[in-house]
Image (cartoon, rainbow, N blue to C red; front, side):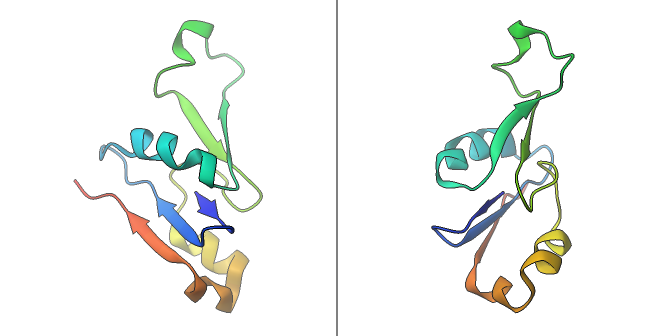
Length: 84
């Protein structure tokens, strides 16, 4: 997840409350919450979402994706990582 306005990148580590953190940071980010087409309505409020944007390809994307897209501008961003 990336925010060009607030200059942060959040790296979602699986099984570290990352979905909750992403849900809180989402209004500040450049990305959007999406659901798979086959996700039933009753699951759309749970943790079955993806986070996708111009640079962010999925919610567990690694730093290399952002480094490739941003190049030397990567150092302008704070990196946030959740830990187990």
